[in-house]
Amino acid sequence: MLFSCPHCQTSLDVAPEHAGQNVQCPACGGRLKIPKNAVGGGSQNPERKGWEEKDHANVNFLMSLLIGTGISVAFLAMMIPFRGGIGSLFLDRGWVNYAETFFFFWGIVILAMKWRMIQHQKRAVMLDLFPKKLGREINIETVSQFIDNVYKVPLTLRDSLIVNRIRKALELFESRPDNGEVTTFLGAQSDVDANRSSGSYSLVKVFLWAIPILGFIGTVQGLSVAVASLSMGDNASPDALKQSINSLTGGLGVAFDTTLLGLVLSMFMSFPLAAVRKEEDETLTMIDVFCTEKLLPRLNDSKRAASEELIEQADSLPGLVTSLAKAHETFLINLNDATRQLHDSSETLNTRLAAHQQTVEATFAHAVKKLSDTSNEIFLRSGTELNSSFQKIATGIELINKALGDLGQNKIPEVLPEPPPKRRLLGFLSRK
Image (cartoon, rainbow, N blue to C red; front, side, top):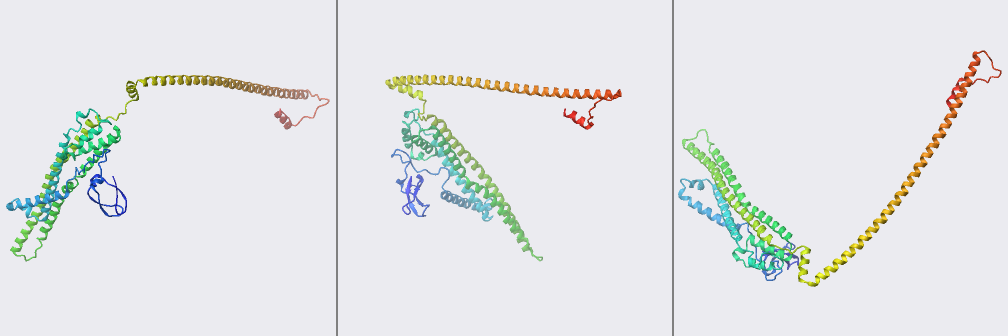
């Protein structure tokens, strides 16, 4: 819901979890308190104001810190009577073992609190959120009754993952009756809850990493003390030598005990961490299955086929049958007219195509005939000219043969033309 900042008049989008809290304006930086009645539940029904949702994955940081500190102090106090044995492992090895013990019990407290929250979520799955008396399906007419039934859930179980998810899905369906949108919302909400659950183990994972690292730090510290205790002069007395050996063994004891304690505590923390994560994953899967198998099949967004709606209207309204018959008759008449026009257009198109084809064929035949006549004329003219040239050549050769015969008989012709030069004769023959 929109809320106006009293300092700079900036419009702020206030979430339900901000109701009754002091927040800082992102525009001017001023502090302002959001009234409890300024944030509604987001429903169309004014009587539904929703409820403040808590964090279902992360435990209270301050409470877990205080409980972890108290348990750590109590445990170390219990080790005082056993200081000669196992108690020395926790009390006589320096600050590293104290830190390892504190991180271990703090992580165990966080896992125990998460286990309790998970059991609360599992109990909420057993609620009958869709009673049969309200109907077998959830449609636009009955969804408000199902939402009101969700608001009747006891306060101890109302603020749970499954109840909040079902309430939001039903309110979304009430405002926009669409099964697809509700399915998308449930999938997105499932991813949000899974990511939030995975991120809630970040601090415990840090403890699981820090405890063995602290053990290695204690090892380095103990070894440095042991090596420093060996620095003695040449004339060391037996008492100094004894003291040096005691320091050496003490440093080695710190080195090995801190590593041993760190590895043991990290191993002991790994088992409950895996068990709690598995339990929470199964709970989230159970909630997803509940929404998929019990909520979605009941939703009916009334998007039925048009034929079914017409049949129902025809049964309920007698005059609708006559209207539908007239509309059907008009549709058939218009359809026949359109079919007739389409048939006429098709015949006209076929006639034009046939005439066009005849024109193309006649033009093509005329062009082929003209090309053939032109080719024949060219070939005949070339043949005539070639024959005339061959005749002229033959006449010239006869004259030459005759002249050569007369020379062979020693006859001198009365009038002999001047013989052309050989080159001229060859040129003449080549021109022919």
